[in-house]
Image (cartoon, rainbow, N blue to C red; front, side, top):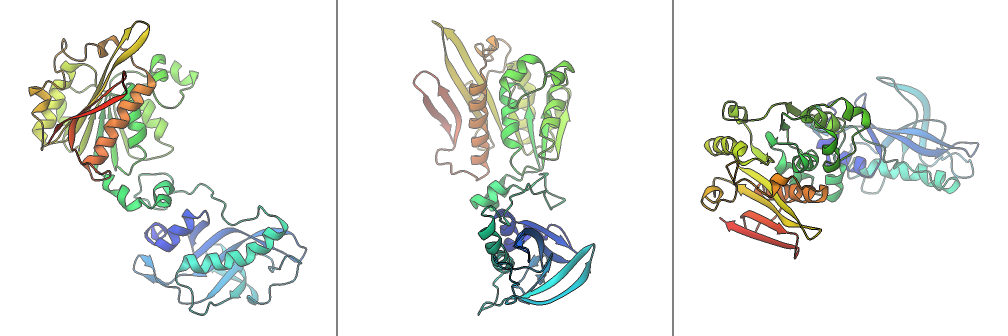
Length: 393
């Protein structure tokens, strides 16, 4: 049985979303850790099992109301056998180490509509008696669920999207390759946000090492031992997010005119580099390839013991690119590029805001968020808390 059956079948996926421990084993549907009461009025845990009726690679309506159970003879809260649902008791091996002890029969008038209906009905019958003895007894354990699809980019299921009912919408962001160029303060926060989306491959480009000052303007918390090894930024962040997701590709070099071909095949690029002269060959290559990108930057200055300045997000797509040069939205020379930014006044919250604005724009471009203005240049001014949209296509 293909493990992705669970994620492809709405009824099985809903069982997982509700917190049940779901498994496909020996061609059977298994709910683990279902609480029940034994003859001694002890709360125990057993396996609730059902055969599967399939229509191709998804479940169909259950073709039998019978369920199986592995455990002692289930009883009510007083220790009396549940004879109304138990219609047979004999040990039976179903294969792959799955052994059951009892069969259940409880049929609604119109039958079970799907496997969520069937399994939760039997689980509720058993656990209601267990909860009368131990109010904490529930089959909804919400244990961390490993991704059951070998093609998934995640090591465990994105239940946040499915619980919010936006799983299908989030698939609009399942792009083949997204690049993040520059993993300083803003670039690292971009990674933190993009890593939680179903992008197939995330490519990181940066030739610098991850040093102590980086730890104070990037997400998470580096250990002292990690800092002492002075890893390359791309390796540090790749390994930091590896427990959550796959396909983060590290490129430990800076991009210039000589190696810009490495951007071939990218679907979208986040450009998080502060030097304008370093941006020029990258932007020229992306324009030649027709790849949309978002460039970020900030100009923060210290005035009268307070910080003031602007956080900038500039977008370039095939619909609008001329503003990058004609309006000088992005400085492309060493002298002109972000002269305030060159002072290196960066604060983690502003880096995070800059990254959030860039990622929100990316999500707008690919239809995840509604975009009425289609702005290609956005600035946030600290003094006045003003957000301004310009360069609308």
